[in-house]
Image (cartoon, rainbow over all chains, first blue to last red; front, side, top):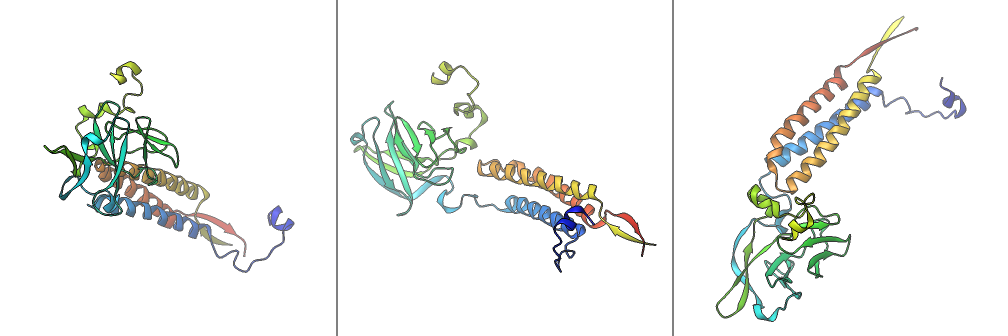
Length: 191
Length: 70
């Protein structure tokens, strides 16, 4: 009898019912569960993020998001895209470019906001650059879902579909991700 | 004298290490899939299957004999 059993003489009726062998089998079955999970991910064809992040491509019904000239550099505007719950943000960067992103942080789904030429998630202080939506600081590791915009001849602006995720683009274009350029000279990154 | 068949502590330790590797592998694969890199899935599934095979073999087959007095 071990010293601690003598020191703490508790007698449990079931104490001997879970053997080392049973514990090992339980661990092995948990291991099999992980394998099943990876197999499920392999066989699953739909995107993992579900309906909130649909496949890239045009939508049947483009959404008008106002006049392009109304938005000054540094300003943003919220709009709904696919349905009443699909919050998106339209912004004009400091360089004058119009960009639109789904307003859902890729970390834990908080609403991002446009501040100081970056998209900021206030929940955990994650930041995204506005050029392609890549995360540049904080917990998020995936880029924001981008919305395709179309400016029509009358100056109106329309959200017309989903843009493909930047990570799916050819490797030559991925160098634009600020995290890929972390080891380079900061002056080169700005250029 | 009789003999009881038990799993050895070493085998149990190996199973625990395999489970930690599985956990890390699964977390890594999940992150890769969320990043759109589905190409890692076949290889990861093969590795995970091999680890599970080893764990199951150890859990069900590994033995060490202890002699004890009746």
